[in-house]
Image (cartoon, rainbow, N blue to C red):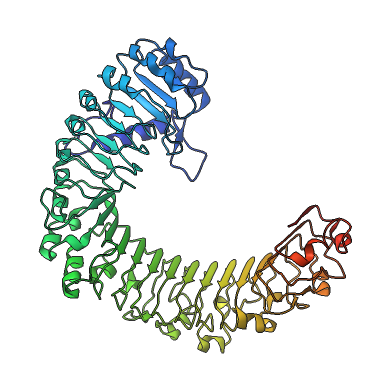
Length: 629
C-alpha cells in the first residue's frame, strides 16, 4: 500500500481488498508460503525463491546485517531494511548517498529491543523520496520539525520509542496512510491538527497513555484501524466526543471506547452510530476507574441501550458499567456471531443478562460484579442453554451465592453447558456449590478462594446414580485451593481421564480423604498436595499406582512419609517436597527405585540427613537428579 502498488479505493473495493487478492494470488503461485509456526500469522519465502528475488532486485533492495558494508550501497537503492540491535548503525551515515531511498524498515516488526541508535536526521534531511520510515524502538525522543518535509511518506512507525511529543509539523504529511505509535509510553497527547491527515487509514495508539484525544480525528474519513478512543470531560471543547465516532464510518476490527461517563445522555450516545459499523468485530465499552457513582441508574441504562453495536460483533467487553441493570440487547439472539463476552467490575448490577440463548458464545468471563446474588435468574431452563460455551471464568463475586438454572435441566443430557470444557472460579466467598450440575464435556476445573463451597455438585445430584453421560469422563485437570469446608470430590466414573490433581489448603477434604476414591483414576499421573493436615503422608491405598509425579508442600504438620504407601507407587519418577519444616526423615523402606528426580527444599530437618554420608543418603543415592536445599 505504501509503495503505491494497490489501486485507490473504488466504488466496489477498498485498497485492502485489492491487497488481499494480490497476496492470495502470490500464495497460490508459491511465491510466498504460510509460516510453519501454526500460532503465528506470518508468511515465509522458500530459499530458492528468496535467492531469485534478491538477484533480480540487487540494485534496488538492500538488507543490512552484520556482514553488510553500508559504504557499498548502490546509488539506485530504493528499499533498505536493517536488523534491530545487530548492526553498528553509526555507519549508516553512508545513507546520505541513497538519494532515491523509498523504504527504511526496522526488523523484526515485533517489539523486542529498545533504545538502539539510528541517525534519523540523515533520513529526514536527505530522504525526500521516503514512503516507508520505521524507527520502531529506536532511541528517538523527539520528532524534529523536518519530518514535515517527507511529503511522500505513507508509512511511519514510531512504536516502542520514548517519544514524548508528536510535533505539529507531522500533520502536514497529507499522504500518510499508516501511523504506528503503540507502546510509546511517554506520549501523553496528539497534535491538535491531526485532522489534516485526511488519508490516514491506520492509527495504532495501543498502550499509549493519552490524557485526551483531539476532535480532528473525526475528519479522517478513511480511518479503518483505531483500537481505542478516549472521551474527555464533557465540558471541554476541541476534544474527542462520542458523536465524533459517527464520522468514522469505515472503522473495523477492535475498538475500545474509554471514558463513557463523559456522555451527556442517550441521545448523544446514539449519534455514535455503532449499530451501523458492521466491520467492527470486537467492542469494549469502558467507564473510567474512580468515576463518580451514576446520578441515575436509568440514565446509565439508556446510554448503554444507545451504544448497541452491529449484530456482526464477535467479542464484547463491558467494564465498570455503573447501572443496576444490563441492556436487553446484550442477550439478543440477533447477535448470533458473538463468541466472547466479558463483564468486568460492573459493581452495581444485581442481575446478569440471560446469555444462554446466544448461539455462538464460546467464552464467558464475569469478574467483580459484586451485587450479583444468583447466576441463572431469568433464563428459560426449558430450552437448551449455552450450547456452544467452552470456557467459563467467574471471579471476585463477593455476593454471589448460588446457581439457579434448575437441577432437572442438568439431568437431561446436553441441555445446559453441553460443550463446556474449562471452568475457573476464584474468590467467590459466599458461593455454596461449586458447579451448577454435571458437565459432560468438562476438561479442566479450577476452584479457589471459595470459603463456603461445601460440594462441587448440588446435593440432589450427589444422592442419585448418574447415568453414564454424567460421569466426568473427559476431565483432565482438577485444581482446588483455599476451599476449607469442601467435603468431597467428584464422581469420577470408571473411565475417568483425569491426569492432574492439585489440592491446596482444603482442610475438610483432607479429613475426608477416605472418600476420594482415587483408585478409579487410572490415568492420574500428577498430584500436588499443599497444606496437608496430618503428620503422615500418604495413607496406604490412597494414591493410584499410575502416579508419576508427586508434589507436597507447605505442610508444617507433616512429620513422616509412609514408606509402605510409597512402595506401591511403582511408576513414580518425580518427587518434590517443599516447606515441610517438621518432616524428620525419609521412609525407612526407602523411596521407589523408579524415582529419577527428587527435589527437597525448605525442610531443615532433612538437609543434613540427605547429605552424602548422612543417615538418609543410602535411600536416595540411586536417584539421577537430586536437589536438596
